[in-house]
Image (cartoon, rainbow over all chains, first blue to last red):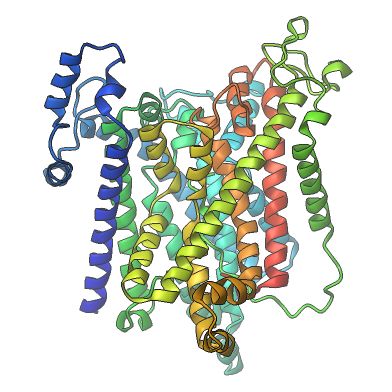
Length: 311
Length: 295
């Protein structure tokens, strides 16, 4: 178990190092930030001063090490636009994003998992077909289309709800629905196939053959086994709590992390982009780590054998 | 739906019932194939089919509604704020979006298969490095990575296609590595190696054809994702840049006229939805037919 833990934690750390390196390399490859930020006809001494101030004249490995140590000190640079620390800019947007993504996650779990289980248990029934049709539709409809259609119906035609902004809870209804419906569809589809796979396993037949009632066999044997693949995707959803609403926030002009990211990308405000990238990566990696540990809890077989990269 | 293409997560394949009625193709799949053929024809014959150049202005018919909503046949799907014909723009957009999706799918398949084969061939350190990259890619929401790269490098069409080509390579890499490793333990690869074939020949001529059906199925399953990704980024104004146009781009533009001229947005939206739906249906069906083991 300790070995399992150590392996997973070191893998997570390695991934984080890769992300940081990725951010650094891409940042350095992308050309001279001095020229990006300053206009082309800025006086040379201003550019030189900018370079000096941001440490752009030092050797590349020194910049890399400094970059790394700065990150460990929680210093993610300043927004090149307004000079405030990037981490501050991002942090003040986090509550707004969570206000959308947490309720949406609840919808996904509360709707998607039961629907998937029900569909699997009643395979080929009308309800199963309906759930699957909705599920396929749910992930082929892009979020911006779903969001805009909801706006068209509930804001423009019916006038029940506002179409954008963040003044009251009513403003959150449409974005939360947009996020929740699509995610629930994906989760339902996934849960269903995980359940179907498990229901076809020999141990289910054995359980039924030795006289275990159907409901009990499902509860004791099918659900725990089907939980393992489902936990993976739920982990992914938890990991994308911060980053999962980029498009939806833009559709609904919701001032969250995603909106900030889009604006920062458009303005090429690299410090902010980096900060969000690292934050998202950290969330994702931690969520994956928790999922990996949960595997160990859910499936004792995985505790001893080191897992390959087949997760 | 969530911005991160969760459909990216391979749904565990249902062990397909041993269907013997293989000749019958479900109606929905037939419809899907017909739609995709139509899209391909449109993409290839875009110049012949579009009634107007996609940038042509018709200032006397601005915001003209489509036929059926009080419009005229001159502009069957209506026009936008500048009097540009929605149908013509739609046709050009379909070509652009399909070009990007095909290009990106091809790139990610080639990249993934190459890395997967390298890992399977050299094992050891190379394999560990590839697996670490796979882990990295799989653990990051691709949209965020893509946005970061776009922020750093700015945007140009070839770069954009290559960037989208990085989406999903890790899945091909996993499949190719896994299948190549198991092929290595089967007789045929060892046999041709024993006959003196170079690794290029072994992997290119013998292993690749044996895993092709699995790869084709995963390409079909990845294709809608790329379309959604491209249209999402273009919708945000960070993908295909004007004056070029793509489906997502049109939706982003049409959003401004949501109340006054919803047709600008509805036409490309429906094309996106129907196309991704068709490819998904086709992919699911192919998976069940060709490769029930694919996960």
